[in-house]
Length: 340
Image (cartoon, rainbow, N blue to C red):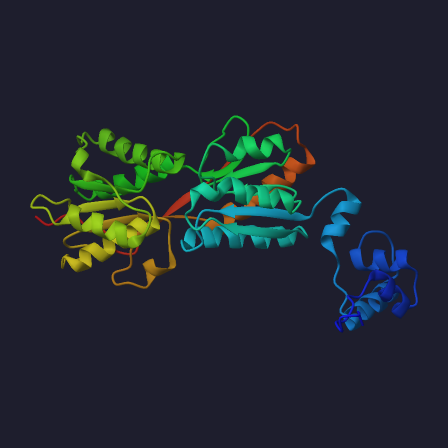
């Protein structure tokens, strides 16, 4: 017991004494690095469990000269996309015996560098981020901390990334609506400053151009960052005399806004309005009819980011690369030819 009445934390020395082995043997048995006979390893680990001993990973990292934790910086966990991405990172990190330190910006882009600084202070081996500015990559580069950009690109020349082909995915999604006979196809989008939004808008315009449909600037609507703001923008779009007959919503939050707006205005889906979203969120299969969407393997993005980061830490001089994962169209019946 300590002088303040609390129990002292067990040490590897305590474990070694309880198991009747040397401290170095106990350390090898607990870490799995170096030889320890199976019966000795079991005895040491049983003693550790009995004493409540927990490995000090920070101390081990300092001793070994490398960290086994990964910093994960995401934009907003309230969006299921980022939650699934973080989950994919965590599962893959565990597979490689790494832990994660997760930071959620909750939409506050101004906190990005402070959050990154805290991750560096935690001695992470590298950072996986959905960046929100051009500042993150040079900041971490100056500190010698590798960064993997996920979902969007800010530093294609100097930073590895894991993304999907947003432009082709958006083009194919819009083309699906045009092939059904729609000519007034609207785009609901949040931003075009990031590569994600810019490429999805370009894909939308590509599909129109390939089919000889002149873009209507009034059908390209910039909405907010949450479903309520997106719904308000969608109501304004759909409550027009010459409203669109189809909408491509550039992410799952915007798609929710369009779906809410259609319900509010009494528009039947897909009879009065066809909708295609981007990102296959869980709610899309719970509504009637279900919402068709361009799906991406979000946990797979996170897993690929972990592998890319570990490869970068093993070979810092390797050429910069971008890993591009495929998307797929999930048809749930929210699209149909326009009414005659």
